[in-house]
Image 1 (cartoon, helix red, strand yellow):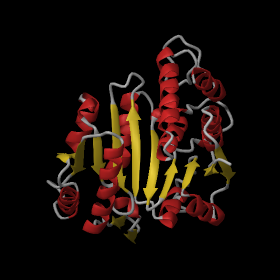
Image 2 (cartoon, rainbow, N blue to C red; image 1 turned 180 degrees about the vertical axis):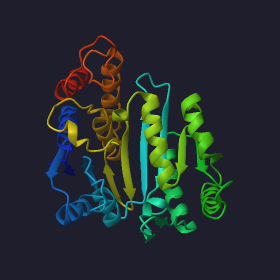
Image 3 (cartoon, one colour; image 1 turned 90 degrees about the vertical axis):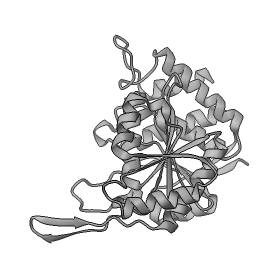
Length: 315
């Protein structure tokens, strides 16, 4: 009997990339007992019981007609920290972007006051920041990371971001810590991304910086991630559901596969996780069986299925 892992395929390209990740995970030889669920109340309960899940992206209507199912899942499970790993194929850039995910502008506290005027609130509490920072501190240490950079904009919004900065510094006392304004951090992500080890920031800045670093390392399709709560970890790639690509077997499965490697490391299967990561790196560096977003000039892009097969062969 293997370790119970809940699998939420998601929608859009979710089923394709999670199926690829599952095939690679199974090829490592680690015994995993997969429990496939669709998003909903039964999935939430299953994840609470198992404590670990691999999730595909879920589509959020752009017209605002329905709330984000991804945010709803995080709230139901009280997943209050998200960590995304942005790593280049050659390993020259390898940054963890960690964000507190219950507050900030993504809390969704917004309202219209007239047909042409609206407001959004930016809640920040020391308790939430410090709870998240404590998890980030442990995760960084377990990952062999030394320096944590707090990203904020306290110069322009000193009440909310000033509180975030003070609370984060207090919670991270004793660590190697520096801080950077978000606009300067964005510039550094482009000019000198290797200066970062771990970034800790709020909900909005973290989402933007992780996507920016995804572009810097080659594609957001390379970025893996995990949502963390007390005793619960839900692993998922950073990219969205990309409905227009669904069913075409062409999208990059790397983010989902590397999320699977993070899952194995979480389960204590470090050797298998290392093998997965080396196999992915080998395929990316070779550049012969990779999808369109990372294919070198003149190389025919591979399908999602073919890229996953190449990673399995490299194992």
